Length: 147
Image 1: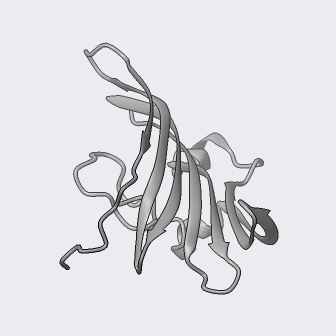
Image 2: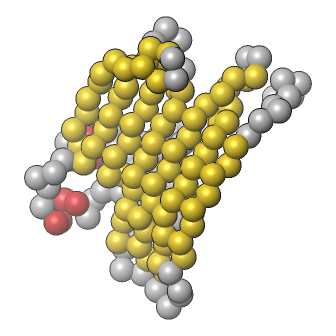
């Protein structure tokens, strides 16, 4: 959900509340938003960056889950070409620190995640810390997908 619909609630993760709603007025003021133009993989892109403000106090930082999110949009179609995240949170009963990256690909008219990278750790109270690093590459996508 976070990759394809950022800023929306993620059901099933307790104690996080609305902390991922980075575009709501209460949360947006905790971030710096920038737009730039850059090249990515030979394509001109708009680069939209969201980064937690550095001067935030501890109490305000507790309202954050997304530390930084960068999205590359195709210059002409505005399609998402790639997105990276750094997220962290401490809820007492669990905490995590995760970096994710998704690169999009195209098969006919179908836009799909062709590369997914994940590097992070989770710690749940009374459980051993979990660390994960993986890269998933998706290829040979059929354009005969029924919707």
